[in-house]
Length: 209
Image 1 (cartoon, one colour):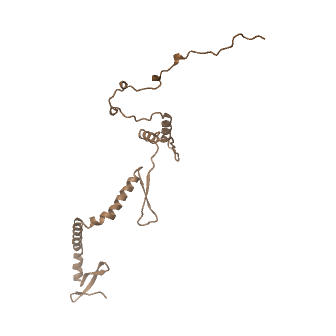
Image 2: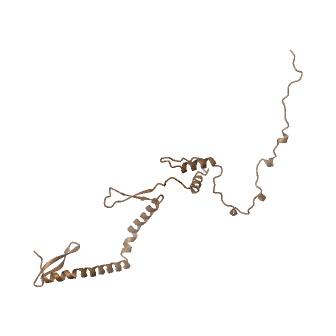
Image 3: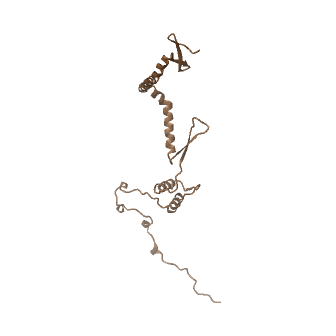
């Protein structure tokens, strides 16, 4: 047997030419490279950076009309999930029909059967807030408003006008009743009064019985 007189040595290459200096290991933004003096001069970015696949998937899910379909967005806290969804929704027009708001309200004639009110999308919350304000007004402010001098004056004016019209209507009837020996008398019936026709005997109204 024969053997080589020299042992094989590993091949070593000179890598000094590939060395990277410490200054080149990190990128630095030089002030001279910035063309503005303040961030107020820069238009804010409206697009989502670094999430192209997520944006495409979200747009696809929002753009198709699929009853019962949901979009599940997940990610670490602080990664901008809500910002992503908001920006995509603000920059696209949905083709699927918007779901109407359904509001059930009290039915005063049939309390066991509430009435359904259908409103355009996102109007239900405003409708509820307005109803709450109306309820607060009726409970707290309406009694005071109805007892004010202005309201009382309008009430008296309406009552006087109604009485005048009533007298104009019943004057012909009273004249005919007087010729026939009858008269109209207001008879109390609890908290209200009713008008009855009584015969006249010796210039006095007498009950029919």
